[in-house]
Image 1 (cartoon, helix red, strand yellow):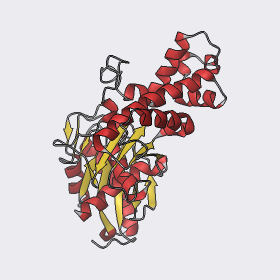
Image 2 (cartoon, one colour):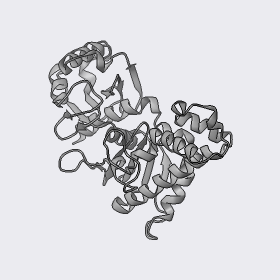
Image 3 (cartoon, helix red, strand yellow):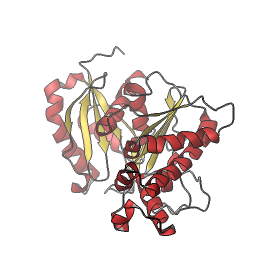
Image 4 (cartoon, one colour):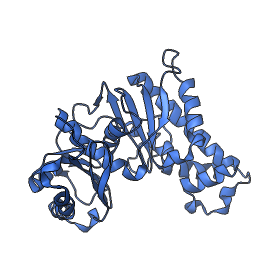
Length: 324
């Protein structure tokens, strides 16, 4: 298909409380961005789709329906194969939701759906740091830890559409309990923003050493406060990042020896810590690799703006869909 900059994809990111959407051309320019709808306002998913149609219609009409190539959606527990959202714990609608079909029927456009981390990986491959790469792993470090694995230019979905949950792999057997899943020692329990908060609280309890973190109540401490204390030279806050980077680096070494990617790309709020997180991560990643893998895999930050990444990633599904 000839790609023209006057063609647009609709990119939609569905979150637990609200959604983001916009029209995106093939170069990654976003227009008509909107964040007005809240998923919690709609008891039925069908009502949500109707409201989304009404919200998007002025944008679609402004560029012309004939220029819209399709709709891409990133959503929690989104299944690329079936176009369904399946048992998403942070959405108000339960069960298996045939969202792609509902969207296609309502908009009269093709719709492709995947989970938010896979969408981010596709967006990075089309618009960001992974341009030209055919083998890489995208790790999203936010409230949780998500991942998208690309091998030979294709996202790895597995036989059922749910492959790539690297955040829930067990990297400390018998370790910290994950509050949502109940598992012990998962990567997400340590390397997420929530994990950083918990590590800080634990370290403060284990020592009487002075710390800027003690100026805050335990329940007030979050990853932002840990970062602010760390850049002021606080030893405990810096140790939190060193420990977090160690665990993340060890996990990344396992992932590299599994799929031998060209790069691992880090994305999300946690990477705002910059060298505090990436230096110990790189050190322990390399330390735990077999010699045949050492110093071969780039560890880099995403080039996508965090505010736009979800829309870009979802829209990239449309161009992928049209090229198949």
